[in-house]
Image (cartoon, rainbow, N blue to C red; front, side):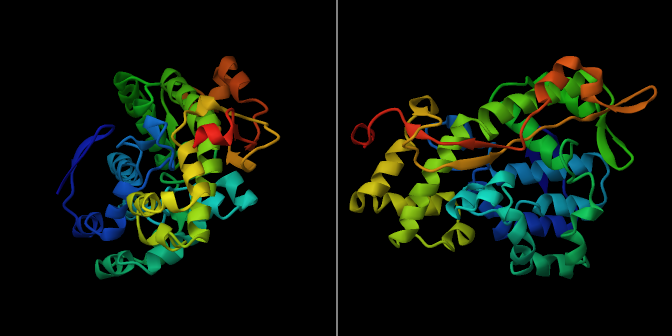
Length: 338
């Protein structure tokens, strides 16, 4: 089996367990789950490289490239398999303010999802301990805590940096070739590459992940999906059983039957610039996770934080909050939006 990726190139898969996992319905469902959520007015959010499948494969390929054990490669491939349709939007549909701040609903259900899917029997069939694969403490290259970097964080940054054109292909290749493993973690061997990566991460965080566009998306789409559930047009379970396409097509079939549903849907066709923040008539207050990286860079005297090498970068990340609060409303009247 051959895999090809715009970030990490090509790799050949010979291991039967990986071949079988890659053909599983659970992993293939991710091809139609946006990593961003549902906001059709932002083309980058629905780009073919912003879905959970290509990201999962990218994490796997990065781990494979750096010689991670097969168990860690498997864990990387499966790390996002339990995402609901529209990814972190589920935290907002549930109106869980604390979960919104860390966008953690997927982590809560990951173990039960895998164990109750076709993935667990595949792993057991090939002699792998499911509980071991699900325990992130075994896999520091795959996952760790901010402000460090890991395979998960590296892939979604580099992939989306290409989509949103805040890094060039040659810069991405320089970043990847400047990565090395030190004491069980990814670090940079080049301060320049570390700064390219970190600045792209800051740009993506401010303009995409925790920016106005995401605030509009989560605030409005949560209302859209919650209304559809309340009216019985979709079920909450559909978000875990099916993909983005199924859920939104079910909703589109009922738009003319419900004026509120039509209103929220129409708002999501409007660009982020047509919304205001801190509005008294906000649709619904939302919290958004604010991400900050400060990668380690190996120099002659050992590893130091990038912020210790670059004052300009240190100024960018100093006093950043762990989450942001938004109160979003359209700048036009409801009648104009419909």
